[in-house]
Length: 114
Image (cartoon, rainbow, N blue to C red; front, side):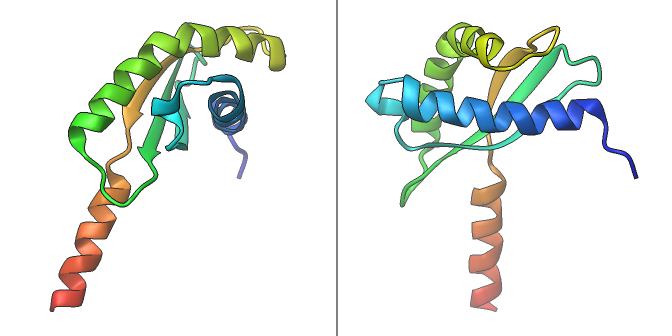
């Protein structure tokens, strides 16, 4: 089975965005951010970056604050990506909080209680 170009670009973006956030952005509010996945549209126009917050308790208000910060920094992140990645067009970046980890933890708790 062949992988789609958008999947390959998504994997590359995940790696590079993680590096940019961890090493180039000095905002302490983003120190616990972990990029979990990047989904790129077939035309490589939009990249949805899923992230989670590393820590004991994930609060929705904190994730909303982080999302706003990341959205403001998306232009700078995109600019840095254009210097590091050699593709014709760097996709627009949208950040979404990844609720799948929280969901799986809730299911695990429910299964333990059975």
